[in-house]
Length: 80
Length: 222
Image: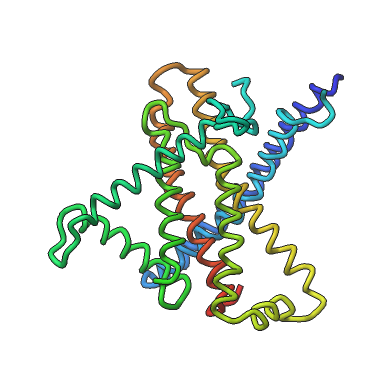
């Protein structure tokens, strides 16, 4: 296998596994937030703001994987 | 699709300085926003006109949100945070206009914004607490945590940049792929989704900047 093919496979693995677990944890955090809002509707503002910030933090992990994939595809240090 | 998102597309060069498309879009946005602000506030008065009322509603909403996050009087931070929100929102929505590409989809613009946030956090923190008490914050739970605290300052600035860049760029990519696969009309729902993503990202960037500044000035804990 050439280094290009290995880079493409590496990018695919990075993006796929980097999508599974952030998606799972974002779903869990949204479920927890909805439960909390259903219990205490008057706290919805604070909860949803915290939820947004937390989702952004979780999503950063997925985006790190995306950046790794892009580096492999476009700025690979092993391909000249 | 062959063009890398990490390389800026150069439009022309002024002497030795190459001017990329993102910079030109930023200039246009700056001119439009400044022009709108000047026109809205030209005849400012107690009995607000139509545009002045819109501007006041916008600023008041941003101010009340920031007051809830920081937990103190928001007006010292409005010039920075309000401008950040308005600029990032309009930059993310630049793709709505034909021919416009969001400058936040290239890595230079988010990097510049994240560096601005990085320095203004220290600026507001030192101004609110004084240099000695601000620096003592880094040794707060224990002296041994100083390297980790400094590291977290750097990584959170980096992730602020990467978050905005990655979201906008990946969305551009998705639209390009769908256009490549399915032709003319199918990308339209994705463009609508892009409006939502752009506004949410602008909101998140501003909220995170407000949280960092709030932690630095010391009314909430990180």
